[in-house]
Image (cartoon, rainbow, N blue to C red):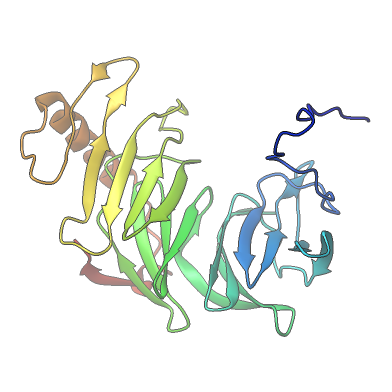
Length: 257
């Protein structure tokens, strides 16, 4: 099937380039940059969970195969930390996964690294300093390899999946996503790594209900309706939180504020 692209006019700078395609078609893969190369791993194609991965060299504009994952997975989080790749959870052949795999590019090998506190998919991961921060529904977890140290951080206000997440300076921003009823969200939250004000609502505006309120440093007055909704969300999360006795021991009882 041929595809057409809108080409820029002569003399204008070209913003997007057409690069060589990946070898395998992938839906919901993991993507991360490590040591000057781009890695795309796992995903699914026609409901088949993929084990394979590829590495892109921007100098040669070529994709090269890497070692297969031990467990095919999609809808998972891939993060680069200290010269290695970490694959967290996702969907496998038999449902949600709790496994973590680590890839060492020096040996081209995936090995089992650890277990998640509970099975997860549709999670996001960012790195800050020497840790990986995982976002799943309302939870924010900190993972420090290779010790396998887990810590729970302050819960997010909103249960969400398929959101955008990025670190800017000493703060983590979480944008949009889908809520409990799979409706698109326009909510933005910010988590501070470096200050005691760890979690801040910087925007809370919905198309259905209009302005609900905002929570900013130094702002103590929060709209009554927002407080009611946040209380309901927390109660619902506590009611629906699964119990995973095999993994709960991994989480420290210490909660980061």
